[in-house]
Image (cartoon, rainbow, N blue to C red; front, side, top):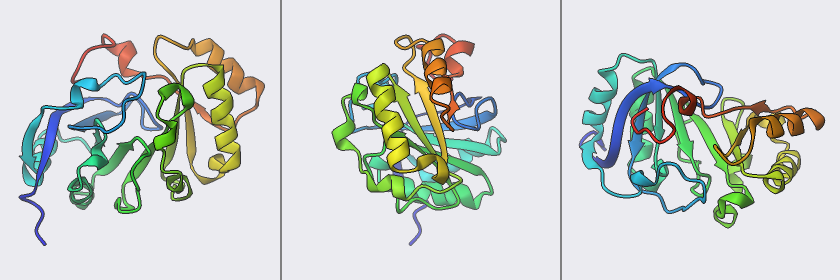
Length: 218
């Protein structure tokens, strides 16, 4: 079936510096899709919950190609809330692009094209969305994927450490610990990680230190 004329609701497409993951610091095209069924307490993209404009997969690909970037991330909102996203992922992979898919962990990632890199946000208690996690997703992560924990406080940290150990995540994929911007100090999280000798990657939201934290399209 030709899905090229299928529509997705798109909030924005922009070119910026990748702020997170092991790809942080690289120029990247972001396709921010509209809609999310989760309501994390620390969400910084609530403007993507609704609105946006319909675009065909073909139009999205043309817009991405306009920036001549080999790296592209599909994000949201929750991009997997729209079923046609799986087709978009495959089409972008067909363009020989490095494709990242940022997902909140509540939706089954099994249909995601395995050429893409899944960045799975594991919802800590401080998010208020832990009960929405689809835990089987953790078993589906491979060495090219990444598990991200956004940590609000010490309770979140201890919980995240337990999940990493229970699922042996650091043996399965890259594990990222990221402080909630403006709530948990970088130093506190860094010192906890060092004290526990954790085999994980500490990260910050780099784009929030380059541009104003509330700025869109970066």
